[in-house]
Length: 185
Image (tube, rainbow, N blue to C red):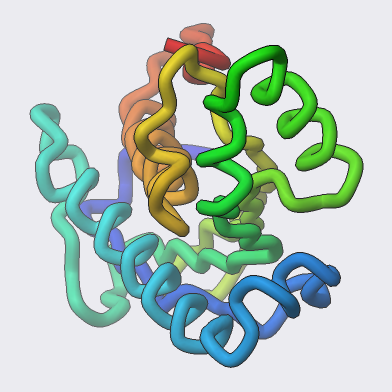
């Protein structure tokens, strides 16, 4: 596919209709707030992708507010969103191995902060799908993790990295490999 013929990109509002069913943890710890959280994170994701393309030093694509005949349309969908459990995060710093036990419990119960998405890149004029993407990331493990003390700091970090990777893909030269982000800083 020759992407050089496109001059602009439209980042559509993020679809949340495919979000996987909430697990017991989400129902118990963010009960009544998941829809508000989801709306906020969907807007954050759209804004991050628009900002990443707008701030691209190569300026390959102009970000537009509506699809145009010479534009690409990036359709994003959040398919999983598990916030950090602030209470469990506090316990990670308990003495005598509390952190290890909490991390094992998070992973075993599905309470570990994760975010997943699917995306389609389309020709805005024809609606033809040009490329499809999907990824799922788990929070990074850190010695001291201040991000764990807020509900969605890990998810925001992952979304920001995805946006930067998409800009890298947009500027990719033939044969060039776009590296993922390292698992932990």
